[in-house]
Picture (tube, rainbow, N blue to C red):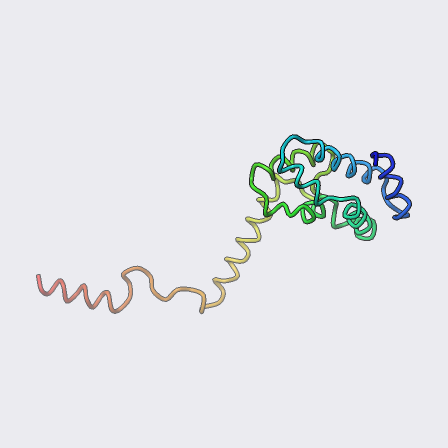
Length: 151
């Protein structure tokens, strides 16, 4: 089927679909199918028309989730080799499908803030603070004093 025919099928099955998003998604899959890289062609197999319909139906019901994450989940991108994932992300950006919300450059800042919040919360609980601090415990001091007396 051509890109136009696939978009028509999607528009008939999903009444409130954003035609622009559907066209970008279908053209992305066609570009992946035409790729010379076998890893990229393998991704296109998991993005069948049935899967695209599912992704777009879910996107029309929950636009906050975003197409970017749905495509990555469908393609199982977290299990891809790094080179294939990079090529896949490049194809997504060329198709105009970007991560919703903050840009990818700012995502590390959010993760750092979350990590620092978690670590500061753990200090409030005494059970999570280690009792031993280098040589300041009683047993080490006792042994050091014994050693000094022997010399």
